[in-house]
Length: 78
Image (cartoon, rainbow, N blue to C red):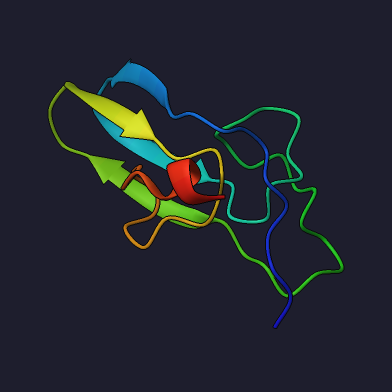
């Protein structure tokens, strides 16, 4: 399996309202951290995120986190 592209080297911290989101796992999206379909033709698929109540989240942009879609600090080692 191929490795994702590194879209950023720090998380995007944001308040997410209740709803369904699709996190980019390939690193190619121009709408980071969200999927815009740029994974087409790759082995990657977006990760569904369902938020039930508003909360602050640190969204991974390096795409190498082990806790996707959330940042786990992996970007510090890349």
